[in-house]
Length: 151
Image (cartoon, rainbow, N blue to C red; front, side, top):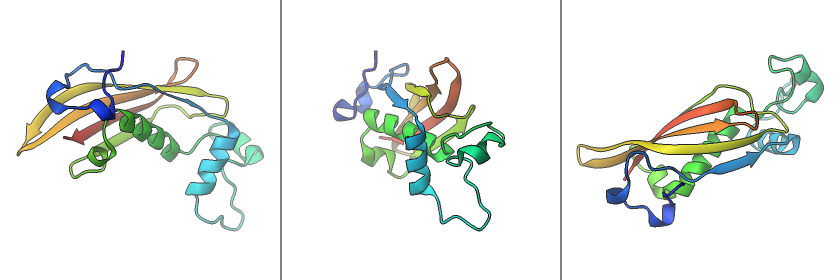
């Protein structure tokens, strides 16, 4: 059961093994289109969007449209924001690394879960380290992330 929440967070009470809140995202073509529209630069001549052009994407490496990897990073950050105050997540010494392991497709429901894996102090800076996993409705891991949050 998740017990870390941004409003009640206290470094001294955080323990290795604590669960982060859970985040569930329902991906559909509309969300893929919207994120791509917000994140993309202007299209170039003879340019097709792997994420939003369904006909073009059918012949691509994923065999259909998929979300942008930065959208998955944003979902991981959204989960972390449920567990930690935003000013901690964006503070000096904050780190976030994510690796997409499978594409997130329209129709997927992805559940993001996480856990505190370490905590400590370096040069007077306290930090908490977490791992986050995104798993789709077929129990396939689509993303793995690690975050270090300064406290």
